[in-house]
Length: 476
Ligand code: AMP
Ligand code: ZN
Image (cartoon, rainbow, N blue to C red; front, top):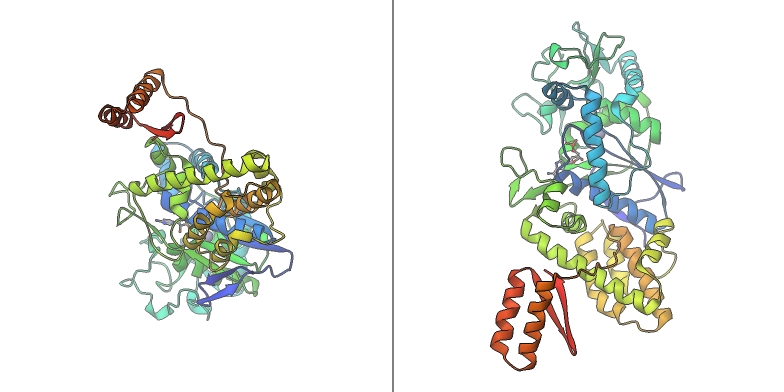
């Protein structure tokens, strides 16, 4: 079954295929590196990761480009606040972003260009836009894109130029400077920003004097370098739809004279405990916050992928408990199949990591896979997967188990939830003693004592699982 996905530009679900017939080339707007990425950012990056993995399991080669925004008003303000260079700040938070991404099982993009490493390409694009009449420089040395010069402006957001006024401040306009009074029209947006005293040492030379690029131009310039004028898909959170992506289209199509992205993939925002994430509410949780509370990063990934990407998802700490159980269930099923097939979990994971494409039937996982291919319906895919687990686990014949194991791991690769070998945790001596005491009470039919001791074990964080001839202890 071919993969299809909703396209924000045409407002239609469309099949995905590489235009060149070989490699599916896509660009994702990456993080602004001035602080830790929060779980909302990671909801978006995880859905992009699942899209890539699903394309790969479907047999396509991908080229995934995701930029690092390492110069804008926020990064400059952070460097000034902390009294260090822009590069020091952005390097520090880039490293942290990479660490968190790895914990969450995100595949590194094939290219991760930094805006500050591509200043000349951005200047070149701006020069071209000025030459052909789509942009103008002001007396104080800034350059603006003239929105009225580009007829298609607003085609992505369906926002007509005349609707954009100061009162009607478009979402994302906090990225525009309030003091940009030199613009010919309030709709025009900055391509180059002249140096201000608050920029400190952050400055590059340009034909219009010292300054730094506006935020939108970096994605137009870098996507062109790494993917060409036209590429298969462009992705980002829904807040970027306007003005960022609208402006990217205007800059790229006006300067290159070619269509820009063929498909637009936007991810709806994450809410936390029913509220919008914000610094003032103190709910900008990070990967570190989840780990500090004792949760594994796989459980966090599970929660962040558990809602359909086009619907709002509400994060709660309670949902992390259910996700932890779901992850355990996955690992348990994988352990069963590993025993029946004689192939270890790590062995099959590494084989699939090298060549994820599934060349044949999905057997019991057909429905789950179809859900993934149908507008990346992850919740339906997870539902189908859990429903299929008992049937998969029941394979005792070695050949059947090998086949089931292959399908299961391949499907989980697409979700970025490859199983792990369950850690056998040894309980401390006093816990084992308590559990032995309980077992003895149970054997002598003193159920009241046995129940009391079980409750005590639960209180200390241990679960007793009775077998016919003894018991197992599992941390809660
Ligand atoms: P930023 O670092 O602010 O440039 O954002 C990085 C990515 O995270 C962008 O694609 C944003 O659209 C996305 N994003 C920001 N906030 C949220 C949120 N609450 N939920 C989902 N995605 C978000
Ligand atoms: Zn961008």
